[in-house]
Image (tube, rainbow, N blue to C red; front, side, top):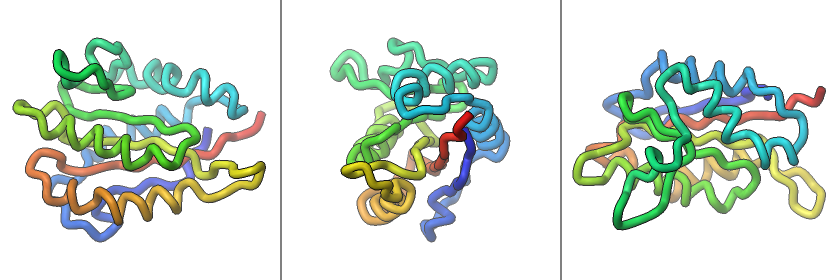
Length: 172
């Protein structure tokens, strides 16, 4: 896969006091870039597990029990989590309408009594298809983040920043 764009809330014009850690950003981008999936079917089936496997050596896990940040009351989970760095990763493979939901899940992880997330990551494709025609997933996500959740995160005492990683599939 090829990383084609990255941005954080500061890049969208929001005031951020604690930007996404550069070292973690580099690790995440490197891991996404190392993934060798070449079809939408493979992405749907394997992307979460592949990214988790690539990030495991850096303290990330996809263990469902460790990614359930709101137990016992709620069974929701994030896709990948680094407990020591308080970084939560949500992966959206094809449904642009879920971007706001994914970001709000990360914000809620930062809003627990003892915050479990300080930095969120959203991994999204550059395009999605409507009736067989490509549309810009990345542009829609950027617009939705600005409109729906950017101010919520920027005004949150607990969620410091959001990194968005936009990928294209490299056909092999």
